[in-house]
Length: 159
Image 1 (cartoon, rainbow, N blue to C red):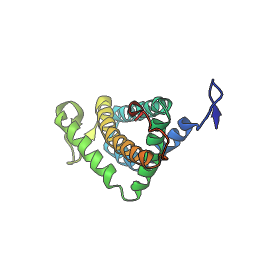
Image 2 (image 1 turned 90 degrees about the horizontal axis):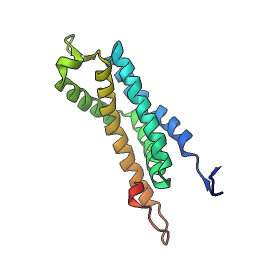
Image 3 (image 1 turned 180 degrees about the horizontal axis):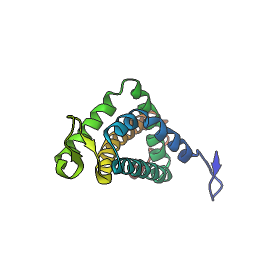
């Protein structure tokens, strides 16, 4: 537990978020690295960095937000044993990126090969946004189910 400026203790959500993010990168990073080359990999890494920073910011917003992100993300990481959500999110992201095919893709062996940094960023950002949204939803539901009677619910702005 860490102490805040006013002396209250709170769970150190930010280091836990970094660990949960790393756990959630196993399957998406495997497929993302296979579909990218050159500068697109720089875009992929930049998008992951954006999620890392956004997660740290989100964890500072309050207990409900941090709990939803970290717990939902940790539970969602388990789905990588059967990576259906990750594959579907990736397919959606690639379909969106293929809409901009002339900018981001080279013709090749039938599989899209991202070659530009913006293409790698876009595909990774869309995939991550879908997966983080699902993790937040799972975490928010669990958070709402774990509230104790008589204890006020979290401010909805925190969720």
